[in-house]
Image 1 (cartoon, helix red, strand yellow):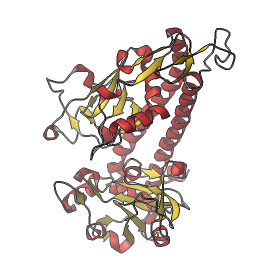
Image 2: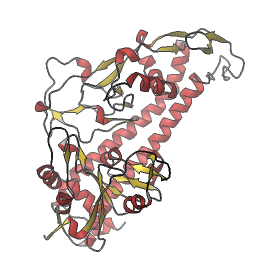
Image 3: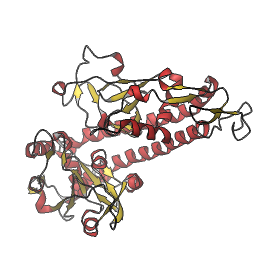
Length: 427
């Protein structure tokens, strides 16, 4: 199999576009490091999730995302986080690639972008990037020279496309599940807002409480009117947020029995377990709760503080700086949505400010006052929202299974151990 240097069959550009909004520049959306890192492919469905920024005309011309390109993480604090790629599956008019990333535009007569993306996810590519990364301690990086020199094994173009189509089909199903979950999360949020922000939960006659004259009383702590008989106390009366175990990196394995969940795995509404380190044994000093259960709720306590997600896998262990919401089951969904509300986002941001790296204290967070509805209202709310949550968990479990199948299929296809049935690939 002939190999070509990547720079001979593709154009590699290093982005320096930052997240700032500058007067006089054109408004754009920015595909950032985390967008590249956590997605096998970037699709048009993700457009509105990209952050707003500005860029100069020459930056837009050079780094605008186009179908068939591949984006790649170029530098990071940890060696394992560089060289992670994603395929650009659609054309974007106003989305460009942000800094700390490289944009690769293949020569379409020789190299298929889908195939290249799959190749860059293999151990073959990971070993190359690990050996060619520069820097130590604070930051690691891949130079333009290292990227251009990456040896690309070239197979016939039609075979490249067949391999790419298989992975595209898997990723489309993963993306569909994520879109369904986004809609389900929006439904759960709307239900919470309707019941506990607008106070239009069903009254004894099934009518919206506040809209149909339900009695409201002034609460001095909350500085607003709330339904009669609702309690207002600090969160700590019902909720404790427990931090994970301080695992030692020297105990990590590339593969093993348990995945270690760190803050980078906790994304908004989704626990992303790709790229986890492993251990084979639970430390004897660890508390029982660090062995996570399906349905557990997590919150990030460092960096992008306050991100929340639900556990959908087994054999996961909780690392430090990720918090576990611990309370009676009847309150869990209510507190999860309360902490995810717009009001609490502001509270969390204020609590986490003031340090070079933002840190959120679980103790301080749980001092926040919260109103609690009566048990019968919570039970009624849970019956409705639990059906939504169950569907979200099932979709996330299917995403994990599809990603596992993709990762297992990847080396088999790329090294020729299995071949593509041309009839199936054309369907």
